Image (cartoon, rainbow over all chains, first blue to last red):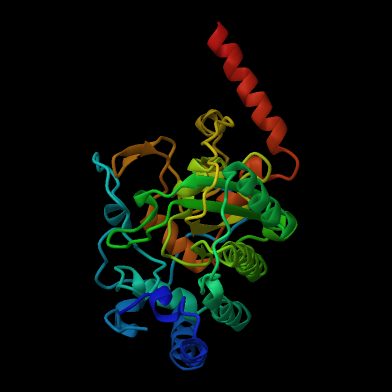
Length: 69
Length: 321
């Protein structure tokens, strides 16, 4: 795992590393947004059901804490 | 507790509770050490409460979620190449004044400069810079009165975006002079609060946020770490402890009952501390909460400077008798 800074901050003057950075950041953002429509949809649905049925939603059952972003 | 805000009952929980955030934060620890990340992370390591953070993010309305994701695109400019020729800085005070003026012109509400300290970094992180320029950007008070709603959450996200833009512009300016500078906006890699206190932006309030003279707690922080020679500011005493010792507004209004009436030992320092485990559940339920910031009497526009004067005058009178 590496931090956002390590992955996407560039101090080189050359243009190519910055283009590479921009492309990988675009992919990263696209994956983050996609997660809202996929994993997020399931979570929101489960959350709504739990709220309606007045029961508790256990996060460890739904979210893999060991998974990297 | 007032009934103006949602009740602190939760339809989400952990089957196996994580290590308490208070333990990770060093509550009741008498020796000084660096902080450890608990909730908002940079991605560098897996955090104890990461499942709750994932739930928080993914259950946000799309309008907030997209804003957050797109802000990351802008943050790519937080660091960059240096100008080939370094501009000498013979007068650090003049340079400080110039940089503060740039930040204020860009919209900053308060600017302070302090030497960089390792205690502004989480354990295991490094940032080899001489000083920190801390920027406070006020939020719209009327919008923030809608705390616990999506409307207030959007204002918070937008303020983080705007304050990030200010520090990124400031860092870019410093780099154009040939000096290293990295902006830390909406990032979890830096503890802005200890830097803000040392830089004279304000003092730590009972609710765990900085209270500044002019805007109370109704602002968001960002910083620039840099090596350019600068004149330093000092911590200020504007009477926050005098207010917080007697005022119970945030403790009463916090539905999660997370705010303590007394200062506590945290990583070797006695200070105001908010119960993480209680706060974070309500924070997740209410789109980032913000009640304690909104109800703080100091946050009301125009009230801070006179409140500070009154509190300091009262203390001086008490000390004389």
